[in-house]
Length: 106
Image (cartoon, rainbow, N blue to C red):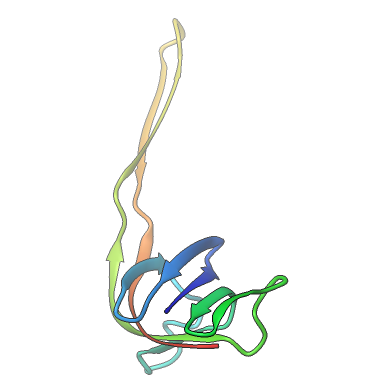
């Protein structure tokens, strides 16, 4: 059984037991609970076949547990204008949340 969820503007194909890194969820700091629920389920595949949402599958939910907060790989931003002596070098690392998928309902 697997599902396709959408969070943080990205889509992820998940199965129970998978560990994924997603953008920080907006309510992650407010609650003490480690449970996370994804309601934007775009596709669910199971024993009964494949359900495709338009745009989401009604009543489908994917639940998981917050494992850790990590940082993504460094992205280098380099700007330069030739022959002008203009160079700017910066880096960025995105804050991510590591989530283990427990259950797919739908």
